[in-house]
View 1: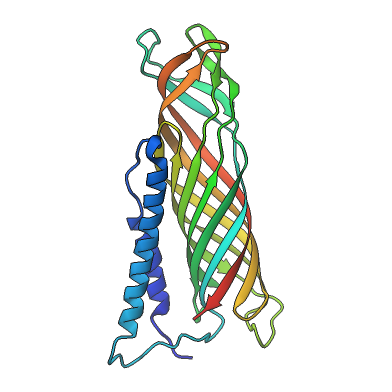
View 2 (view 1 turned 120 degrees about the vertical axis):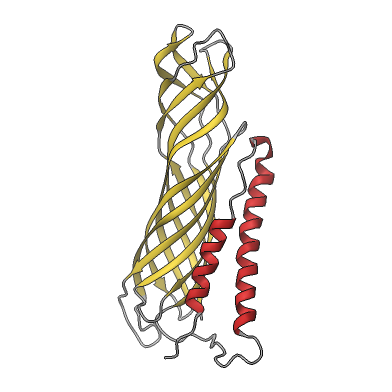
Length: 288
C-alpha cells in the first residue's frame, strides 16, 4: 500500500481553519453578521487550503501523483448531522455597573435555566491508513438555546431584595472544534475490512461563540464526544453521537436584572460557566 501525504494535508487544513476562524467578538445587534462572517471565514479558509493542497499534489511533473481511490481501512470522511441540544443550568455572577445607587458588588444568582434547541453541523476528518484506530476531524455546529424568563435568588441583596427576574433572551451558539479520534471495528467483511460497526470517542479544543441580544462572547472550550458508526456501504455510513462542550467563565456585558414587579436595575456584567450536551444523528461519505 503506497503512502501519500494526504493525512498531513488534512491535519494542516483543520488546524489552520480553527486558528484563523476567530473574528473578534461584536455587539449582539450584529450577531447575524458576525456568525455569518465566522462561518464564511472558516469555510473559505478550509476551502482555499484544500484546493491549494490538491493543486500542489496534482501539479505537472509530480513524481508521485496521488491515488484518490479507497486504499485501505483509513481515509477521509465528510459528514452532516442534526439533533437536539441541551444547556446545563449554572448560577450567574452578576456585577451591576450602570446605576450609582447600587453598590459595585458581585451577586450570585441561583441556577439559570435554558431552553432545549435543535443543532446541526458538518464534520471533515481523516483516519490514518497505517494505524486506522486513530484519526482527526474538524467540526462546525450551530444551535440555539434561549434563556428562559425566570425568577432567581441572589446570595446578597440588590436594592434590599434577594429576588430578581432574568428576562428571556435569544442565545445563538456556534462551535468550531478539532477532535482527536479513537475507534475500534466489529463485524468485519470483505467490503469493509476494518468492520462495519465502529464505536469511537474523541476529545479536543474548540472555539465557541455565544451571541446574545445585547452582547456576544468568544471562548475556548473543551469538546468531548462518543458515538457509534455503521458502514451501510463501502463509502457510506450512518452514526449516532453524544457531544459534550464546556466553557469556563463566559462573560456577557449589558445584562439586566429586574425587580420582581418593578423596573430593571440597569446594566451589569454576567459571568457563568457554560456546558452544552448534544445528541445527534448523521451520515458520512468516505473517500480517499
